[in-house]
Image (tube, rainbow, N blue to C red; front, side, top):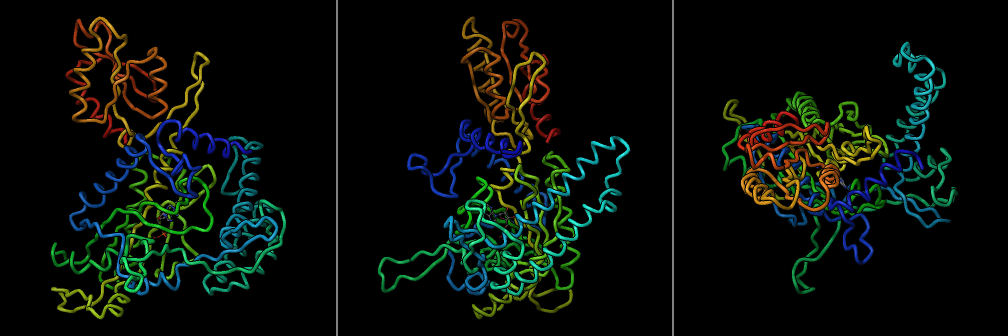
Length: 508
Ligand code: GAP
């Protein structure tokens, strides 16, 4: 097991042990790719959700919110292209009976070659020390260049096959690349078939009048079909956006990597409606804005990268992913898509209702173009946790596991701890807690020795611990302990609220 795989395993068990994420229906041994969020998880998720909403809706006068239903008229999904095109190519290995996404097998193959390049670079870095010029090395080292050429060739051929929906070609390409099943090690593959990812169910109680409905695979369509309702009722002029947060469902073929690929998940999407011809400018604008948002959360800069798509979804004419370097490699957290007028024009055609915008300046009517930002809340949650999880050896040789979650989104902001359970300290601590809890998510902890209590708070990422000791009774001061530095400072009880508030916001 690599170090990173090991870290990821530990993170998954940490999530369960400390009430962040549990397998769904755990007592029945779980349900594949479905998860439940525990007491700390639900807080972290809510805080990330709120931070997104504040940034996108509260801070933009031309973006408004919406909460559309999960069930939609079945024609919506015909018009959007999901019934015909929202499919993944799947392939089975005849020996292991395991099912894979053909595109993922090829992407994993590319990732292996990327790893070879990385190893080469790391080796050279060690050899040359401070004199190492990484850019130059990547441009001139023959082994790196050969591998990079291989990646470019595979990527190009792969994109052509996917875009042409060439299933036979995909099958042949998997054989040509000598990709083996990770379980059986064999190359005994079935043909590649298409598999629609939408969940279906019936609406209506009688089989005669029941009609097929889908669980939405993206929240975006709720925005498209409401765009004129929202535009008229909020009297917005182009360009303007509609934001929505909600559940989406996909019957993913390959469920793996914990909450990275789930069958039920949450999306935070914003559709930005613009004048045709201005979409490229807004597409560039939103790419930059969204990167800034990720940086604003204090997540390590080098861990993010922007990746332009070779393979475009059926609705997009340009697309880029913001990827985070998870313990299992760089993977998509957010997509920025230039969706043209694909969706609105299709809904106009299928519904027979005009979805044109009347431009009061040019006195013309037209169907707006759309630039979309779409981020998975669960993936962002996983990115925050992966970035925060650390195992440290302290000066005294002891170990601590700490979640260095940005304070703004940490599940619990403040824990109040009486040093001992006597001498009037618990009463004083309760007083502080009862005041602080109106402003911050707080916890009260009086069990075990103080050192163990600090460790418990480190493990769930609480940024500030307020300790009440005997001196508190004399001069109304407490200590505030900072999670990352573990430094303690004496402050007045009356200052707690201001200090914590400032630190949460400055420290994001
Ligand atoms: N409306 C556009 C759209 O849905 P997408 O790239 O398919 O685009 C957007 O999905 C985001 O939703 C992804 O970047 C990812 O964060 C999240 N997402 C997609 N499928 C997911 C899954 N199975 N589990 C968790 N998150 C998922």
